[in-house]
Length: 244
Image (cartoon, rainbow, N blue to C red; front, side):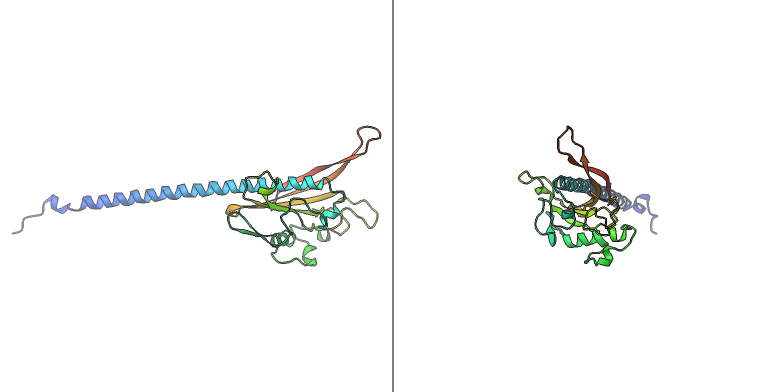
């Protein structure tokens, strides 16, 4: 006759099962902590890149303002006949960033002007849309200043991996139906957009960081401080907003 099983025999292997369950729980907890830590690192890096992109776009606007200050006729900038000293070649083609990614200046220009990557037709440029509701007076964004932000100050290197491009465009309040001309009115009536241009700056960087800032700036003539002194002009920023 077989003797009845003792409690020790019936519980054999329980300790091993409990140990395995504990190890599984600890492994899952450890994996969760590693994943959380990695996610927070990525989020922090993306947050930093986004903020750097804003600063880079703002820097592009500032250099554009400095250059426009000495351009006597803004029509030259709107038509592309005059550009900033801050350029890295022709306003077309691709540029390679430090992280190996590329930006296509033609594609960026087309996206700004007609929201598509391919060339914009005259009808596309004058189309009335939610983003561009001015029809024939829609700004025609023309590349004005562009290049790696690291070379913005020439010999003095800027510690940045971003590429920036600043466009200039006619103020849409104009009534001449010619975005390549600043402030002309065929009827002889005052043109509300005379002496006003828009600037659109885009910054591209690591982790697909991309920010767009738009500003509107006016040339204001100041009366002479003393009799006989020549009047002077200054630039006045009318608006400044983050578009993306």
